[in-house]
Length: 539
Image 1 (tube, one colour):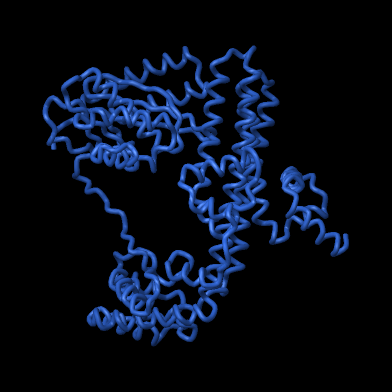
Image 2 (tube, one colour):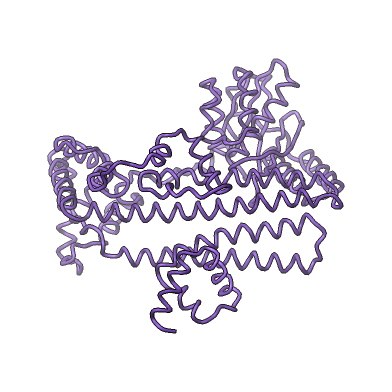
């Protein structure tokens, strides 16, 4: 094969999604032509290969699901599952190759390493250094933000200085519309016609942020189609299975476009970094950091003295001193402050550990004796938005059901709301307290209850099912509390709620017959009845 033919084949794969996908799957199955296999090794195709495999992964799982819901010979189902596993493995490998190639491409490309004193000062007192930097930026009339691309306002400012030009009207429309309208644009992009303006620099970051929500709506359609298929007998299920196929096709496109959005925003950030690390912006940012270090030294003289003493002593014998000790600051700080395990200047702290003598149950001593306490839990699947939820109360009542959720957090909120509404109906005057092991769900419900505003939880609640439940719960907000409970530590009610949630999910996706589900329900109830007793309300 000539160099020209090789180049043309690479260009064809880059421009033709179907041709690239066929070649990648052929390579995965060991039947790829040598010239195609050689072309697929080109660095420019590392990203596109992850896109076509994201698409193929969803389609392969869809084929398995259709076979499970229809009358298929066991051997065919085994082959489909084996193919789906190979695609998933190939996808993971391709994403690892892309990350490795990008890391090699970026090595040594961006700004020089800051001085050791600056890196240590930034880590010794992130807040003090950040304030010194903010003051320096303000005095220079520059945007606030740490000068590290692409996260900071300063990097964005530098990038905008090189952009310019009037934005096309469709780009402005995508930039200025509300979030719901933007997600609808992403769904039309996948289901109707590809939108050529989504990759524009002005909206690509928004595309990447909202691609997950659009993909969730694809999984919602799969969940609805699954429900429709399972509601029909095998003999009349074909039409519903065709709808399931359509949902998987749309979701495969959404998955591919979500991956493409990630690649494009990564490429944008790389260009932003390159802009921020070349003149004149690189010199300006370096000046800001050096001046901020001087401000830090004036504001924190004792800290600065410690930093200087530490770095001078280290550099006296460091073999990498000539290169500026590029990797020494972490070990240097760890040796000086063993408790400091955070990363450079991110201000994060290690997670606190719970003392062994602290009661493993939630503290409920402040509740009245008449309060009704229950634990809610949820389970989500990998394929669709179908979810299961379950709950168990101190008084022995339990419940479970299924719904549709975009995330585990949304599923947990559904479980909390469903449990609370059921208990409120049966305990007309009592305070109802729900415990849940999801901090996201607890925060979402608590915020909505305290503000009396269901939209306060909409960051977590995407689908109409959960939003409707939250609307209903807020009518009783003065009689409901929600608290966090550490999960999977042997708590009887938590374990029961978890078991019911998993049972509900298996029933919803048809993976357990009704007779077996009834037996499992009885087993869970017997297990709860043989427990050590109700949840303690002692402090």
